[in-house]
Length: 316
Ligand SMILES: NC(=O)c1ccc[n+]([C@@H]2O[C@H](COP(=O)([O-])OP(=O)(O)OC[C@H]3O[C@@H](n4cnc5c(N)ncnc54)[C@H](OP(=O)(O)O)[C@@H]3O)[C@@H](O)[C@H]2O)c1
Image (tube, rainbow, N blue to C red; front, side, top):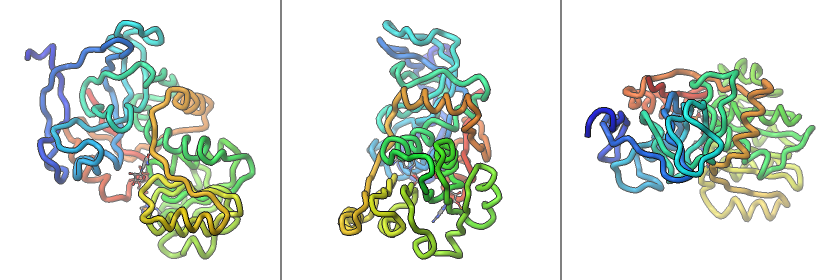
């Protein structure tokens, strides 16, 4: 392999801590029919990256290259691609879970994965958005059908998914209650939260009521307890394992809905997210960027579970 045909990527040979991540040279992929080759400029790091690094998850045994978020520049297009041409700036989420591999200099994916990057944001912003925005959009808009004037509770509202979900909920005219530790309440207000709640000092299930939609980013007991703050007919959309069958049984008993979801790549959802960005209704807060080579540091910081907004890898 000579340098022109290869690329830098972050790979791993074993499951384990951040130290298993290493920079390698791999063959540069070529776009097949209906695919584009994108030169990655920035790629968000998400909890699913460090979970897969540690336990293999959907991917099983390494070696593999992680990363689902992409913002970059189209380098080449395969036969049949009409929507893009080389030089176009695009962003999107690789098919979840098996399309992974954006923590590298180049990635190929079906053209339908991507949409044009809004002009008003840079690649770091755009690379932060796809996975968390699709998650929040699909939970609030598609699963919950969130309407103007409805009351929504967003757990971990300062996190990657949460801070984007708050903005999507506000754009749809909802009243937003968001949980975070007290030091993050000013941040929550700055992104539009109407009522910040300190989950450490207060039990949300005791003080919150008449909620139409809960976005559950915590799972387990929190999923079940979230059902109790709903109005009749309300819905909890959980994006994590809900622990037990109690979630569904308790929902039936209370006359509410319990929904579990997994994010799915979708160009028309990405287009609506891009429109929200273009209209000024959605911005990612980027807590820290790292060069691609320092992916292990990004994993280690993310894994503390205290990030406000997003961590992003920048590919020079
Ligand atoms: N099913 C899916 O498709 C899907 C998609 C995306 C994400 N997820 C999952 O959703 C979870 C959240 O993802 P993320 O990207 O938002 O994570 P993240 O950015 O790492 O979340 C960090 C935030 O969580 C907050 N937090 C931690 N424990 C909390 C608690 N008990 N109550 C309220 N806030 C709490 C922290 O605030 P404080 O410092 O104030 O505690 C911090 O701001 C992850 O487990 C991820 O794997 C699932």
